Length: 295
Ligand code: ADP
Ligand code: MG
Image (cartoon, rainbow, N blue to C red; front, side, top):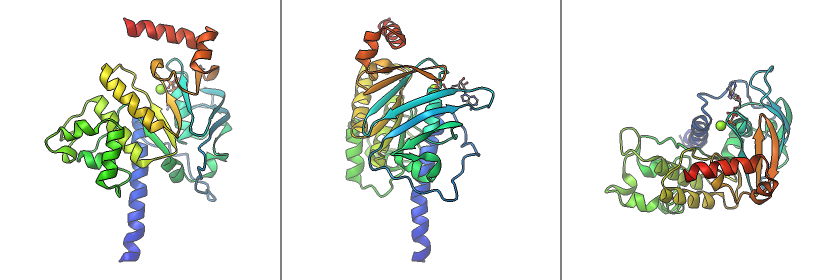
């Protein structure tokens, strides 16, 4: 009996983690299912992430062979650093995220994590090392406690509460009559977009992955929620390698590097200050968004 249940429990945990990551990714990138063509190699090894350096080396990719989407992208996110991708809609930003998660294989070049080509590692191990925070976290029809602990069911209540505190959602939770036992989701309490996102951040804090893929909210939240979320995201990102797909430039000004993607090419890169001084594409996007937010 023990021989049977132990591996099943183990598979259960891994399965939950992968399922959660896949649901978040699907939600984040508008994918309904994992494309079938990506398979583990027979000799695939587990990914090892001692540092967390993420690298795109001269990556080319298209969903259809006759229509290239990424036309030779090179990016490095240093260990524990933050790289923000910005650019107009349709430029290929989400595609970069999909390739990091290996929803598709590159057609040229490679995606590497700590030097390992992600085509050479198992997808389970890859997905386990990447935390995804989409702008609209999927909640299960269960308690808040379950929703935060999802992907790490062995977490105790202290760990769950610590994660919720760091994600700036603990005070809200304890203000509810049922606290952490409140039922949420379609058949329970409906949470606002900002609350759901903070539950997602708490969930990812518990998962504790070395690499993060963030999709920022496109629409403006109220100022207080926005500040809470920015605080929560900064805590989550501390010490983790972070790739942010940014829509609102005001939130990424302190990224280590910002890359501007246009029509599948990186047309500018640098710090916020350097890019503003350059008076190029990024500066134009920045001043336009500033004017829009003021209006
Ligand atoms: P961004 O995130 O910068 O708005 P995307 O990476 O989502 O851009 O999309 C880049 C281009 O790839 C767009 O022209 C889009 O229509 C196309 N595209 C995205 N997903 C698919 C898909 N599954 N099949 C075919 N084309 C796609
Ligand atoms: Mg996108």
